[in-house]
Amino acid sequence: MHASSYKKMEAFCQKYLVGREDQSLHIYDLGSQDVNGSYRPLFSASAWHYVGLDMASGKNVDVVLRTPYTWREIASGSADVVISGQAFEHIQYFWITMLEVARVLKPGGICCILAPSSGPEHRYPLDCWRFYPDGMHSLALFAQMEVIEATTQWEDEGHADGSDWWHDSMLICRKPDKGALWKFKSDLKRWLQHRTMTIGM
Image (cartoon, rainbow, N blue to C red; front, side, top):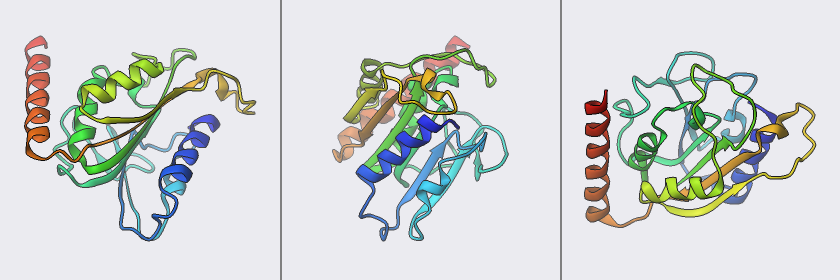
């Protein structure tokens, strides 16, 4: 966890979740393991239910996922908010993961993803990708989500921990409330992607 990432997630909370502290929000954090900090303090309102998801057990991990591509541990339409910071660059097929984000969100649910646009290689255990606004925008559209914001921190902000070098990109998007047709198209896309990945392996 670096300072610029925490600051961006804090800004997301202040812009999109302020005023909802009394609502019973279910919040999933993908890649939640506490490595020099976590986002959990930002989602500590008493009515909120924060759940940390990761691929390995550890501090701040509530649910260990068997695979980043099929979250059998998480029910469809169970999340009001899905967040993820500094995880997508480590996921080989992140676009399939994004289909799972869309699946677990409730209609109208919101997602915030942070990932670097630059910075040195940091294999954990892999380091596969960097992201720009157009890429974030395309990722949301691929998952049939409505883009709210897709931005990159291009300028340094003077973080003492040196985290400006990541120049994080941020995607904020919403799952549309479009009923059975949206679900059918989403389920079909997920099936095709999993089928293609399985055949490729």
